[in-house]
Length: 483
Image (cartoon, rainbow, N blue to C red):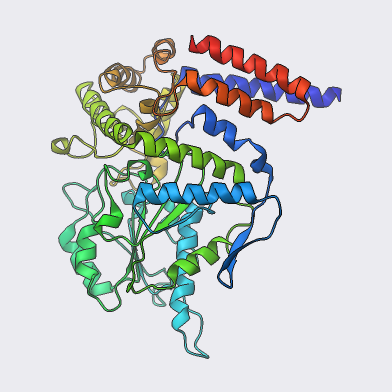
């Protein structure tokens, strides 16, 4: 027991130190991260986090294969209802536990669907051809053959490479699609699947443009939008279902408020070319890809969706204003910003800066981290390899949630410039400035959340005596900090 206590003490202290560093002393500008609210965090470690709730539709009814699942079934139904309202869509599949898994489930479901038409004796086939965004031009790993498309798309026998064609980009702005070339490629290749969405993501995708071109094809492609980065900006930035998309996937923890999960939303209308595709997607979710689908984070997703539906409009507007402000202030501080200045450099939460003249992206990202500014080194479209990145990728969503407004990013941009351009040490200044942004916004106010959080925390402990002391300490500290 002595050795066990020593190990647990050692790591408890390291965890506490890391919590304080990331949550109270740093500015987190990673575009793919966010901090859940206190209640969402507590929901994630509640009793469902250790449970199972496998279920599938059999003979027209939903069958659960474990007992004790009535509560989590209610959670899943409620989360689906709230997310359908958020997207304005018909169906939501919640069992994928990451955005990448959500994409893989859709790809597998589509392969299953296209093989429904096989005649007896015909071989099982993969997707004939897929159109996506080039990984080197900002496309996401999950929609590449080396990612979730692995083994799901046919190969060209003459080259040995997968039949994937990329959405072309403009020469004058490689962050926007070249629509003339796109129209030509669609006609020439006639893909079975078009995947929109990126990880280096500052402008809308050409969903409506593609839909208008292909809508009358007898064999039109499935239009899928991977909104992993911009799920929390749905509607304000882009509303793919209104533009003709059939499927939306995404991560629930980047611009969205949730725990780390994935989801699939569908709007497969009556008379569409895919009447049974949603059934195939559900079957590839379970039993195809998941067993336990992490019920604690599912519970957290429900609470975070309530928050998002309550604060969607002001949050989304502030994120986009903050991103444009950060881009403008960085440009004024002497750091080149990617994108078109006429567009405010960005339409999302992301800001892309070119730092090659000051040093390698990896080196500058580390230098910023040493000064408590957390960023993401990024290969820009003209880079030949990610290992020689010219850029940094920044996201404002988490710091927006901690209360930063446009003008607040002027000081932060200046601190970034001091580190990048002059190699100055600003760690102490950064820590002091972060103290102005410690209370989370766009959720239940801290004072109102304290009582709910205390009760949730207490319910985690079967031994009332120990639990009571812990929760009393927690409640008193939170009340003290809340003033």
